[in-house]
Structure formats: C-alpha cells, structure tokens
Length: 274
Image (tube, rainbow, N blue to C red; front, side, top):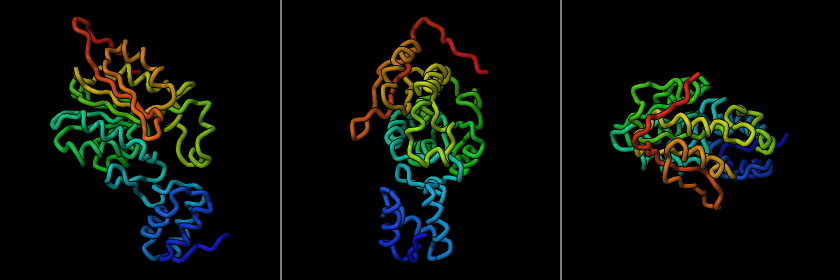
C-alpha cells in the first residue's frame, strides 16, 4: 500500500488520487482533508475507502448541488452536477405559490433546490422506491414519500402541479456494463436500469404525469442518446406540446422539456396504478 500523506499535505494526497485515476483529484483531496479535520487515522480510512471506488459523497456525507450542500447517506444515489441544469429549469417553470413533483428523488437534491433556493412557499413533493433514499431526502428537508413514481404521492395535488421533474433510470440494460467500473459495485442497479432501450420508466412518467399536471405545466426529464426522439410519439399522444431537447455544454442530449396542453373537449385518460 502507498503511504497516505499527512492531513495538511494537499499536494501529496492529490497526487495519490490522481495516480489512482480520479479526475478531480485536487478537489477530492481538499474535501477528504476537510472531512478528516486533522485526524490522521480518520484520513487513512477515508482515503482507502475512496481508493476502492466508494462514492466521495458517501465518504464525506454530502455533495454540492446547485450551490448548496446536500446530505447523501451511504447507499443513496449520488446527485450529479449534470442534473443541475434540469433542476434550474424546473425552478423557472415553478410558480412562487405553485406545486412540483420530483420523481426518483434520491437524496432529494432537485426537490431541495426547488424549495430551499428558489420557491420556499411552493409545495414540492418527492418520491423514491428506496426507503433509505426517502429518509435521506427527508433529512434534507424534502416532503418525500416511499413508493413507485406517483403512487405514494398525495392525491390533493392532482391536476395542480406546475412541474414534474425526474432523473429516473434511463440507461439501456445492455449499456449497464459500459458504466464506470465502480458505479454498480456500490450504487444500486435500480438507479440506472431503464429497460431494453432505456425508455421503460421514462414512458411511464410521460403517461402518468397528466394526472397531476395543470394545463400549461411542464414535464422535465433527464435522458440521453436517441431517447428524446423515441418518446416523441408518446408525448404527442398524451397532449404535450413545445417539446424541447436539452443539451449539455458538449452538445450531448441531457433531457427534454415539454408542456402539457390538454386537448379541449377530451377527457383525460390515465393508466391505473397497480
């Protein structure tokens, strides 16, 4: 084993992490040193946990998301910075006294962004199938419910929601093997597996959201590849208009935004919950 540098040796610790293949070695070294707070034995433990590939957020207990600190408990999906533009767009679509739903909330990062940093009067509810994630989200101040997508949410928000937003599983099952080596060694497959083409859960959200969205409300979903095109028919059939594909700074597809515009003279038709 390599020697673990002293707690105040940022350069040596960064070199150790960089040599192990961590891209943001300087930033990670700084976080680990701050977490250890001068305790040499604790630093030793934290560093070797990181070298096994354990998510940094599980080790330090938090992550920065949209310029705020979000608690992340071990075992809970770690919010990624790539989801921040989706969260910020959700803030823009949420009225000051409106309502929003955050699906597959994980640690509750997007829901917390909506309530804490932008719309403190609005009602934001969230759901996740993982009870540990729900507990973590609640610790972050989120009104979170345990269950599948919309099924555990309070019915009083039906038809009143400004925004449905979600980072739901969208990795095609055959592509799971292409994820970074340590991802599925620590995080749950359920956080990623979106079925054969990655759209299985995305399509369910598209179909079930109209029950909750008000007319003019927004659907915001993270996705990738050709999935935006794959969902086009589903979105049109369910009464969504103004569908926009969201791209990141590298020009890669990162999500979609669509506005729910219920057809006049037609009754809403919803799938039944199991």
